[in-house]
Image 1 (cartoon, rainbow, N blue to C red):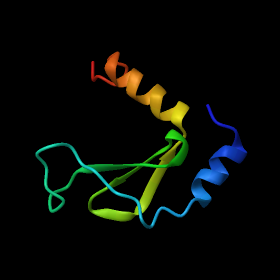
Image 2: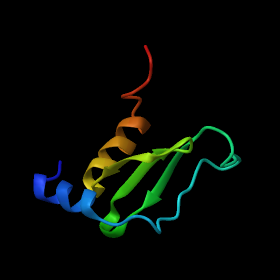
Image 3: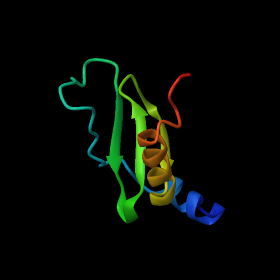
Length: 77
């Protein structure tokens, strides 16, 4: 998906000012997944209960995840 250099740069990016969003209708006080849009189409994802652990995805990785979810790739069988 992304080169190692691209991932290293993504994780070196300062996201301290990122604007985090949860699903509509949820509250930051409840446990939820939050995402933040980063430069270049990248996305960061974290738990609302653990702000220190942040996963970062390149635009291509995020697009592959979203398309997989839409196609049912992660559905429990």
